[in-house]
Image (cartoon, rainbow, N blue to C red):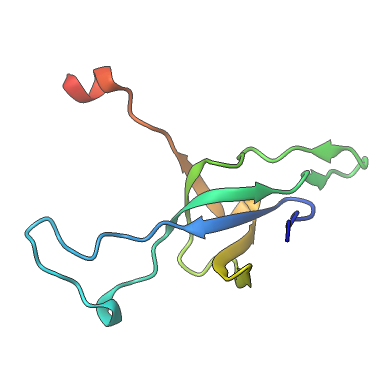
Length: 104
């Protein structure tokens, strides 16, 4: 089944955090918080402004994003747990760091 969100809604797949800390301690599932980072799966065409013109969404499929802790509605589509939220609930896009900046 294909799913297309409406207006300025975005479909997001949560990116699970490591189950182990940097020090090697394993974190049990009951102590984990839900991740606030995800990957955009699908994007709606955008909301309409007061004049009825379409305002495009700033994110695109494949973007890694941060969102609020209680943002969105949890849904299950084709057996996969996803979130649907408005674009305004997205806090920002995580940009990949270029290799040159890592070495400096």
